[in-house]
Image (cartoon, rainbow, N blue to C red; front, side, top):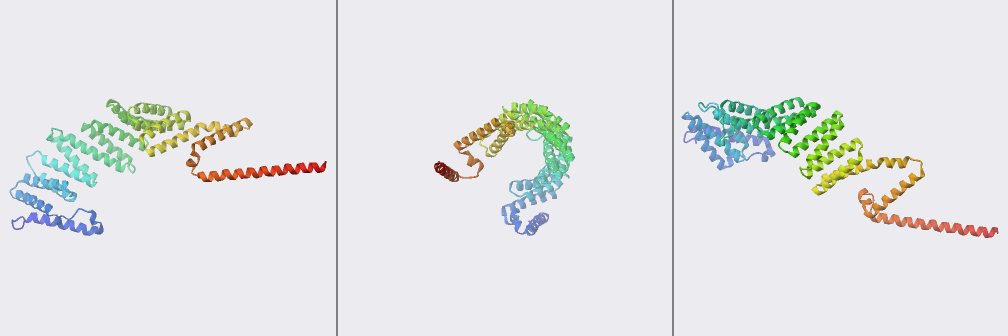
Length: 415
């Protein structure tokens, strides 16, 4: 490079190598997690040499388009070859050159803004990424560009912004709910401008969630209703189910339990056509509501259906939860009759309670569930206990026989 007079290219390459080496030294043992040093990869060094000298040669002749193409090629090369740091460097360099190009309706600048925005997003710098995508959108709206496939570049830019605004809102929703709502409103606007109907519907759902989190239930209901309308129009059963479930939670928090139950009943209806997983979730949701309301019969019915569906899905975690819910609802269902039997002073009720307990114990012994469910013993221990009880009974009987014999002897002596 120096022999052919490309002093500027050599200086840039030398500085990049030195900068990367210093970063590895600062990282210490953690340097193994960084990208490999480029000075040890001759293929990358050769590609750098070719494109940097091409860029310098084009700059000498005032060919800024040639400089832009060479630097953009370097950025794309390192995108493909695990060189995020160098890729980011050359995306920035290509944007700087693109902003100096005249006569192309700022097309190169627009591409550069988009490329740097994507690179910033990959690095997690979402604020700066949004700034570059906003510039990209302004330029695309000004010049009405179309991509090679005929798509609107303006709509593509809007989709980039929708994605970044949504990610930013998610980062801050816990600490700054109102700011998150503002970002989600922008994301909704970008989804509409990008003509991405699917994302526009989801943006309404996210806005509903954000308003619900902030405590504004009425506004949350409005956005959930919009998402429900979108889901019905597009015949999206899962989306409609999610909307009904979210609406039910909002009405429950407002204290309108009747409307909440109606939303969950509608949820069950649409979930029936969305697959067993959605149906299981719907049955669990409405079962929980009926259990809360004290309608334990319906709660048992829905939790029972949920349990059956989870068994078919072969999902151990969901099955365990469904089993627990079903057991709790069954316990609640039997609670009134149980407490009545315990608290009453009538001997007949107590006798029936004892008979029920005895019957229940016999069933558990036949099924072998007692030890497994409670985990409080083994079969050997139960056998030992039974043998000990038999021995005690025999001793009692022997003592009774001795008492009877003594009594008879006393009677004879008295006579």
